[in-house]
Amino acid sequence: MSISNILTNRAYSAYEARLRKEVLASPLPNHIAIIMDGNRRYAEERGETREEGHRLGSEKLEEVLDWCVEDGVKFLTVYAFSTENFNREKGEVEYLMDLLRQSLIKFAESPRVHDKKVRLKVLGDVTMLPEHVREAADYADEKTKDYSDYHFNMAIAYGGRQEIIAAVKTVAQKVADGEMDVEDIDENVLSEHMYTSDTPDPDLVLRTSGEVRISNFLLWQLAYSELYFTDVYWPGFRYIDFLRAVRTYQQRGRRYGK
Ligand code: FPP
Image (cartoon, rainbow, N blue to C red; front, side):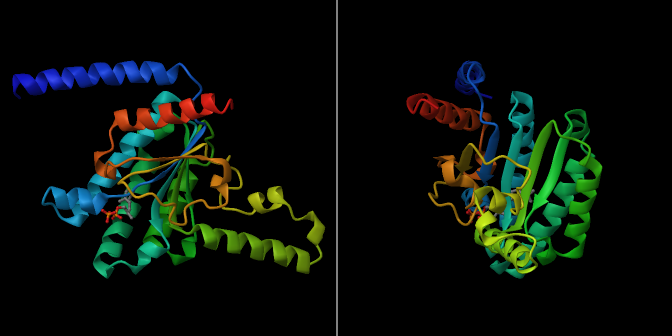
């Protein structure tokens, strides 16, 4: 490594340490939700395959869960596979499904997850998933079901509108069965019928890769969330970027007197 690289790295570490100190001195978001975007563009820029981009993306997710647990962010929800993602090329979908299965098993068996008591859950229409991914989701659920110190939700086969439709159908059925009156339907009732029924709404929703869209993610839940968009591609997302997102959330909170 060149002298200038060493100096740049040192300056970066010092900046990161200062930023971390500043961020940890104020209240953190209780729930961070992330749209992990830009795996393929990251890989393409480096002349790598898209599969390599996704693999690096899954490694990044392990790091980000670590940052949350280390710094005390209680809930992390990530958009790992949307219902629209099923329209991608067959080979890519198969690769992603395999990666998801491996990731779920790896998280479920990670000493860190057990040490920190992280509850792992899959949110989404699991009936759309291949058997081997469903089994991995059940395995992760079973292995972490007694934990509640931290919560890590992976949205897989997830669509916000689909989630709302499913909730409305369940509530409508309860009305049809005489278990509930139409007048009883309010925000709390619908929230209780979402995949996230036992999760507080996200305080901060973050998207990587420069796209400024929500793409059908947590539509119901993000009504009051702060939104943060960053240009970095997901596999290139650094701890500094994470800290900057949290700092922006904190600054906005102060500005609006929350
Ligand atoms: C976004 O990049 C990524 C996805 C749609 C797929 C899945 C997410 C990961 C692999 C991250 C971690 C998840 C796992 C498997 C544990 P993109 O493919 O849309 O890339 P692009 O925006 O550059 O086209």
